Amino acid sequence: MTELNNITLTPRTTPRCWALIPCAGTGSRAGAAGPKQYQVLAGKPMVMHTLAAFAEVPRIDQTLLVVSPDDKFFQTSEIENASFLIAAYGGSTRAASVFNGLNALLTEGAVDHDWVLVHDAARCLITPAQINQLLDACLDDEVGGLLALPLPDTLKTAHAGRVAATLPRADKWLAQTPQMFRIGSLLEALELAGDAVTDESSAIEAMGLSPKLVVGSAQNFKVTYPEDFELAQAVLHSRMTRKTT
Ligand SMILES: Nc1ccn([C@@H]2O[C@H](COP(=O)(O)OP(=O)(O)OP(=O)(O)O)[C@@H](O)[C@H]2O)c(=O)n1
Ligand SMILES: C[C@](O)(CO)[C@H](O)COP(=O)(O)O
Image 1: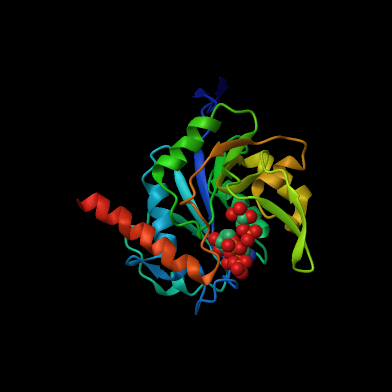
Image 2: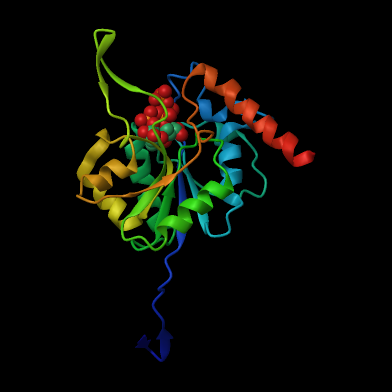
């Protein structure tokens, strides 16, 4: 506790939890007319499903969406009562978008010690329950962690389109998001790792740390290829039907 001009300042000991959603990609593998995160699925643009899941988790204090400086969707859409922040600081890679978003969080009042849950806009099937599972598993952890799935299939390496080898899969996991780390550590890790890393965990691992693996769900897949839209929409429809029956 510090005394300053007769005002008593109590240090904030409980870290806040922020969500950061990189949403500045072009979706080149998805083959859609525009960025995949704005394609309408089950009545809403994909990213709005993603945002809705985070809005239902009371432990998330604030969500920041990182969009491209050229983003047309949010420039032209009327989003009423938006409960999230938008920063038009998307970079040329996912890592750059996340790095810029973390700095934007600091200007919004976040501190190094706060947690951030980084989640792909394109993983629109994430549920509040899965986000809560990650929070429960990591809030007391020294390093942080990520949702991930133990590899369900046999794993091959390839050479010139033919199998080169079959690898043991018992220790292999598919990394998903959200990935949850302290803001200060993640900024430092990304600064050192540069643009090449494809997820936050890789940057943290490069610092010699070992993030916790928290079992996710096969339904939390990333919409990446053209056929993924139909599958994601079918899952969203089945959830809506379950809610109304
Ligand atoms: N420069 C980038 C690239 C990606 N992303 C975001 O990171 C997430 C995961 O990336 P990915 O699936 O690779 O999306 P795209 O880069 O859009 O797809 P592609 O690689 O097929 O072009 C997406 O929500 C995407 O919008 C981002 O914010 N900034
Ligand atoms: C972060 C991620 O979703 C983990 O699986 C993934 O690496 C991002 O996808 P990209 O295709 O590498 O951008």
